[in-house]
Length: 292
Image 1 (cartoon, rainbow, N blue to C red):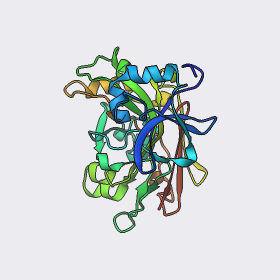
Image 2: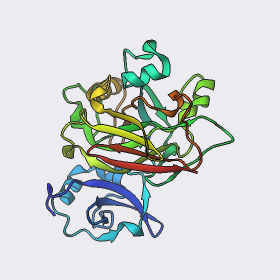
Image 3: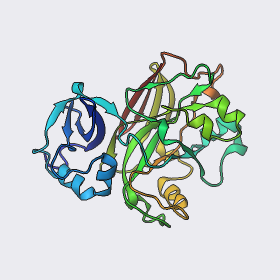
Image 4: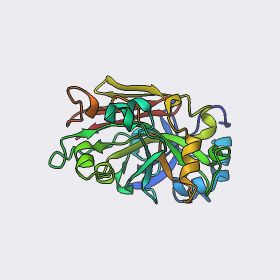
């Protein structure tokens, strides 16, 4: 397969208990095992630092060994980030308003983080934490994966630093968020950041600011919007973050969620055991997880 015949969907997974990475061929439901190839970096995060290696794979995948999807366990594309996941709060006007009215609409990007231990995979269970919270909520988001090191990045150059895009669910314990007067504890429960199923290379996404996004709970549409409604576009977020902080390959930036979260519903539609959340971002993929 030459590049252009099929979108490259870079993924991490376990085969026979061993962590590996490669790419997914959706039509055949097969996984190309890149990590087994001679000279391959150890992890997908490491491979992102050596993008020419991944580019060579995407140009010609004929020499890559394949296995069926049924023989693997999904992992998050970057199973254990080196840093906290960076998140943009209230980046859709309608979500800011549903959570706090017009006064809640930010003038500058609001940034909070989720601990690396929050990250989990497509098809992984979301822990219910019933003894800890009664307000577990979903937030469907497009996430950006940084591809190269940079600081003081201009808006004009910002998208050059992007490797690709994935789907992310910013699971939040709303009561903890309110009780502690900040976001970190309520956003950092283990397993509260499902992401995946894969990373789509940036050159496969014509315009990341024109993608439909939808979240369903048990098949019911809860969130339906478009990334064209970002208050702060991706280039501005990267520019602001990098003014005094170095961004590095494998860094993850969640771009915010639209209106329709369960906590803002009347009556509230927060998550319960057995609920299945599916988030679809146009041109990227569908992330599915069940609360258990």
